Amino acid sequence: MENTITDRFRPKIHFAPKTGWLNDPNGLVYYKSEYHLFYQHIPDRIDHNGILHWGHAKSKDLLYWEHLPIALYPDQNGDIWSGCIVVDKMNSCKLQSGKENVFVAIFTQNNKGLQEQSLAFSNDGGMSWTLFADNPIVANPGIKDFRDPKVFWHKKSERWIMILAAGHLVRIYNSQNLLNWNFLSEFGEGEGCQKGIWECPDLFKLNVYGQESLEKWVMLASVLDGSPMNGPGVQYFIGEFDGHSFVNDNHPEINLWLDQGSDCYAATTFSNLPDRDQRQICIAWMNNWKYANDLPTENWRGMMTIPREFSLKYKADKINLFSIPAYKRKKIINKKTEIEKQKISSSNILCLLKHKIITPFELKINLKNNMATEFGIIFKNALSECVIVKYNYNESNLLIDRSKSGLTDFNLDFAKKENSAPLVVSNKELSLNIIVDVSSIEVFAENGQIVLTNLIFPTKPYDNIYAYTLDGEIKIIQCSIWEFS
Image 1 (cartoon, rainbow, N blue to C red):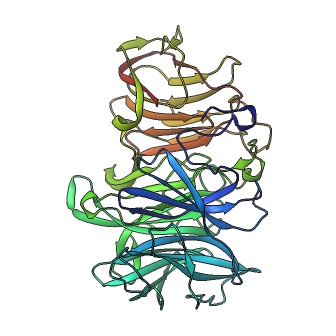
Image 2: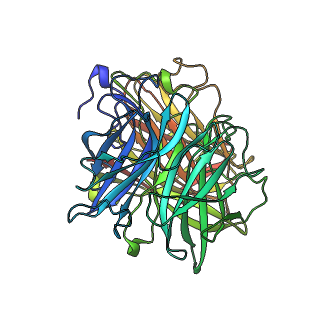
Image 3: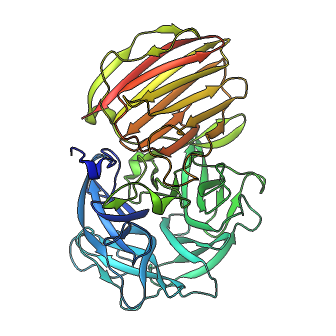
């Protein structure tokens, strides 16, 4: 869709609502070759001061989405807050009424500050929904912040597991039928970042890359404050889960972060992906509560990250969670340009492309350093608005500077400091994968070891890409640029 003046920041390959407000992704579910995305939605406002519903969209490729009617509306039990969807293939809930597998949504309802867990079901693949007559299914046990359930089937215990946020920790429950839940355990006391309350937890299993017989459980927990950018972020834990309790493999004070940019929150994974894939695919809200209500978009506000595929890999004798874009590039790329191998010295700035780039695009580059102290890539438009991705070799830091990226003065917190993430590279080689859309930049470094996600609001699209070095020479080993169709 061609951007109009009033819609100039609408992304082309990231999901955003047609109109109204969007925040957390909810109910991510794969069914019959389609990815369904539900999300926190206020249809009649572009700020968070309204009544929350569940919006709905679907996609075949994880990039281009079809908008669908609102899925869940508030009722006497309250607003529809965050939650999840499972496909109950066993019909354990006894709510299936036709040939289609029943979809079961479990989510928080907020009624004048009282947060409880409710259920809705769909017998037509998520296109229409019925709120369960006996909601809530999990009453509030006297906890102020008690929300965001994520449910999955645990094969070994042969039970449904629910994990939900409760203040600065998570509570774990199980059930045989998705309707009646038993409290099992808590995790989080003194663990990880405790500066802000926890939200939107997730729990899933992955094999460790290169050691397929080794399985680990990963817990995600968004935290309202205390991230590397001193605001909201998504922390994660790696450990063991036996169907009853989660045990962290690392020291409680170790903080691990899914994304070290400013704008990644409420990450959650898809349910019902084919077993043969052995994959976990995640989407997060690309925003920050410090300025979410002030973004300079019109008629809509809020968008999602690029869907990301997770893997567990060893780095410096520790297992870490890696993230890479989850879409299949060959199916959606319109134009590919290979940049020739060459050297960049500190005496010149190199324009990587001879033609003007068209947003959105993806740049992948592999570098070899020869005594340089810094390497950077500049994405720039005709108004000299630019965003800079740079790596400081002396300090082993990856940075994004959006201070001159376009509109920044709508909130003082938006561009007051650079994004920075520690990153040690081996043999002075560095690989970067950068996705630029109309109003966002996502940087995946070293095959997803470090991710930096940032909103940007250039008043004209970036159409030139430059590379530079400081105090030495950099060799481009490989560089490709893809423009999306």
